[in-house]
Image 1 (cartoon, rainbow, N blue to C red):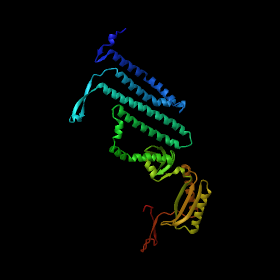
Image 2: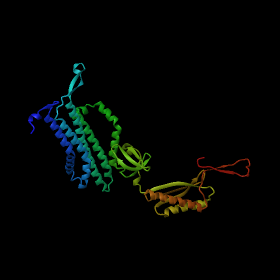
Image 3: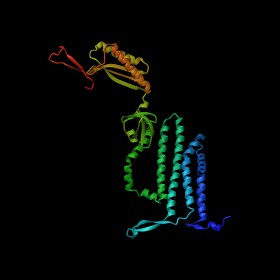
Image 4: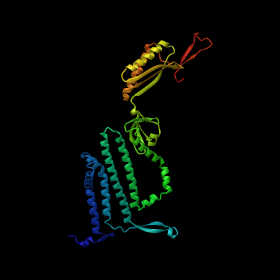
Length: 390
């Protein structure tokens, strides 16, 4: 059996007993940190047993395992290193206004530096755990929201998640200032004065976007999954954050629009429409007689109104154009699905072409007719056809 005098021997300023304690705590912490972290994760999950079901247990452990392991690691290192004395001291300069603004040396021990470093890391890992708990709560809420018919909760959960995580980060920041750097947080906040006003003015746009996000949730001009059009951008709403709204465009790109722009601009919620309108104009050649024009207009209007999927079809002789007789056509499609809509529009366009051809007419295109006072080679007028871009 080892003599107690052996443990009292001093090497490099520390006893053998201190080295044994240092090694023992470090060894046990490194060996059991994974087991302890899993145990703590399962114990924490019991706090949410009424909030979630057992199937969420694996997700909770997966989210909390890493940050708890890091927290245990830093705590173990801190406790083990604190078993040793750190005689080394360093000197730092400090301004003293009481002595003519001179500089004086203040000794700082290595132990103080280590304490502050590990306190910083432990607090950081602790707030990491809190952020992961927020992630888990939002995960469960999103799962519950997905089984409901109301899509507003699908939009609200990600917003609240970002909001709470931002608040936790701010709280963590001020906690580090107070406990690690010994800053009087209350004095700092109350002493901002004019600087705080300047910061508020600089953050004016961010505050407007935040207010815009609350307006979106209260007024509900759209929800996640709606097809919207705002400022020339058309797409499906994927996410509403507390600063901006993310839209998936028809080109499958992501457009990020500030929430202020979503409520200040003209916004069209295309998902709320019950019909899709089609309106266009065709031109018939001037060689088409009046009877043919009447037949073409009547047949087009009759076809649109009698076919399935369209209502309120209208065709009329609108005006005499530069290149032809303008026929205005409009109708509404009752099927909102985009693929079905495109198919119906195509079928109608093809039928219009057949109707025009059956009535011995043709589609007009821009032309120019040059009449010369000098006789041409063939002694008649020469007609030159030009593209629409001429």
